[in-house]
Length: 137
Image 1 (cartoon, rainbow, N blue to C red):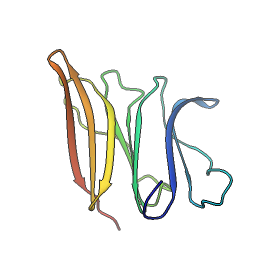
Image 2: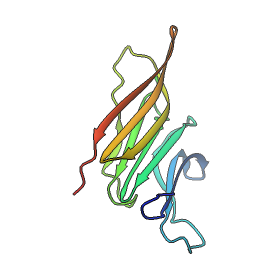
Image 3: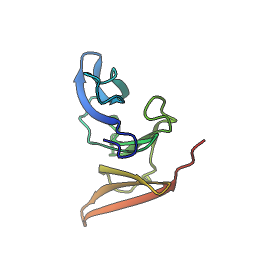
């Protein structure tokens, strides 16, 4: 639930009728009896973890790419409260040769977007954090 406008945002992986993948829906009116129809963010056979954050009209959805062989984290960003996604399935760079990425986290605040994930290696796990300024129109 967004603390600025009260909108409810949900994202999930599902074995849906139209195909398995990650889906998103939102509820803008708290008096409504149902969410808006779900939108497919990306189709993919592998169940994936997903994280979501919103602040006013800015929404970020980070997830394990269900089509990646080596564990990549992908990011969808909307500046219109989830009506339109500005960046479609933009993969966060995890350099070739680096360890597989999983378990995404995302946060918004102070005009910044923070994205984090876990990298697993034979030496142990590491948590990687990247930040970026959010530019609105």
